[in-house]
Amino acid sequence: MRQFSILGLFLLSSCLGFAFFAGPNWQPSKEFKAYWLTGKREVNHYHLVQELDGQKYEGMAQLIFRSAHFSRSKQHEVNADDDGAISILELNQLRSFKEGEYRLMQSVFRPIDLVADPYCYKVSNSLQNWEGHRFDQINLRAYNYRQQQFSYASKEGDQQRDLPKVLLQDELFNLIRISPEKLPLGRFEFLPSSLLAQLYHSLLVPKTAEASLSEEGDLSTYSLSYAQEKGGLKIQFETKFPHRIRSWEEHYYSRGQSYYSKAELKEGK
Image (cartoon, rainbow, N blue to C red; front, side, top):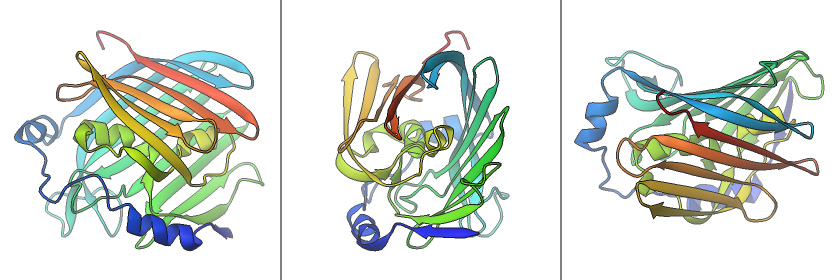
């Protein structure tokens, strides 16, 4: 298994400087607990436009949220009464496009307590198409993230690499549903979407972001722009709890080419 490291001084500065969005007195509200900590799941359906190979394909996406109990040490779901169990908000995102030829799934495991657990613990991605299957997983370690990648393609698998302990773009949907007022703003270091990195055969490396949050009527918009190159994310969500995601747009830049995707909530779903 090949191993790569891109840590160095960047890792040290990121870990010390990203102490992060939740203040010391933050706790989930009674409203949050009544909605999420009931063992139920929330499923929303979206119309998807995904760009690939110079063409835009229509498809579908789903965001499936649920609360669960999670082990910090084992980093998988456990029973509520297990030692060390913590509450997480899990997101399972599914995408299918190009007449179903491309199927992607991402799972994001984000602790609900933003003070005790300021970092996302785990993200996994899978992609299937007519060429084969690819899978990668990112796990939180004491001083960094560890990514493992497996693929039918010899140049992409099997590999593992260390990544800096910074915000993950993949956890932003979870953070909106937990507490949007605690979203990171201004300039900070982050890791771009690992789902898009897999789709576009791109190496996952840290970037610098500029982020803002605006409110207009019943909707709020979180905008994240890559500071040093093309790329960004815009998420529109309902300002009032439970902050349902209404739409998102992604601009991704890989190997000299720009890619675009957009998803809009299907009403009545």
